[in-house]
Picture 1: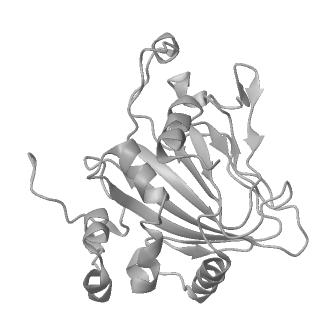
Picture 2: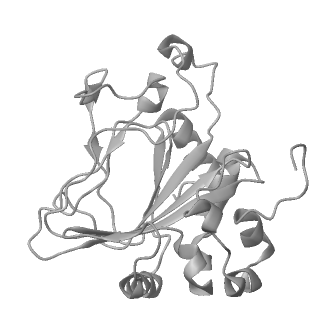
Picture 3: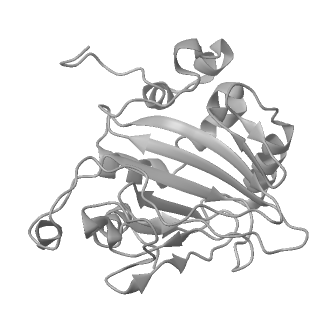
Length: 251
């Protein structure tokens, strides 16, 4: 039986991550891979020997907009971060043979908290930022799987230099199919891994969601300008995700 949004939300609270299977169908996967192959670096993007990294791809054209609010993913983001959440980034990656992923880390920690508090089943730490990984390849042990330590969002701190486990539990590879989505909260300890294949590149689209009060990370910041064609093509929900909120206390 498929997991409901409530089930996935519970997993974010208890495990710190969840996998949504089959979010993208084969034509959508092929389209996204083709779109990534057309990207050229601008601003802070880069193309290296073993990886390519393109920021704010939603602003390249309307064809990227459907991937901001994919069915199942956007409902989970809104359940986790409130209905007025927004997108703080959308990044496309190609990781080629020889790529070395990031060491164990977390993405964002609002404040350090005592682990005893976070271990209390009566206390649930609200989420501030969540990331969705849209995998465009079948991810096996050799094709740079994302590695996660279940429950480590309750550590209340960042991993220390050289630390490789939490409570004796080391990072586990998330093996999944093309079209699956990994959603995880920003406090989760996670890591990248190597591309050990001889001839395969991992294609990945990241969408970062934040509560309204979390700043949007649209580089190059002061020089950033929205593409008018993108704004014209937005649905009301997509406009909100890009920052078109109703007036509130600090506006």
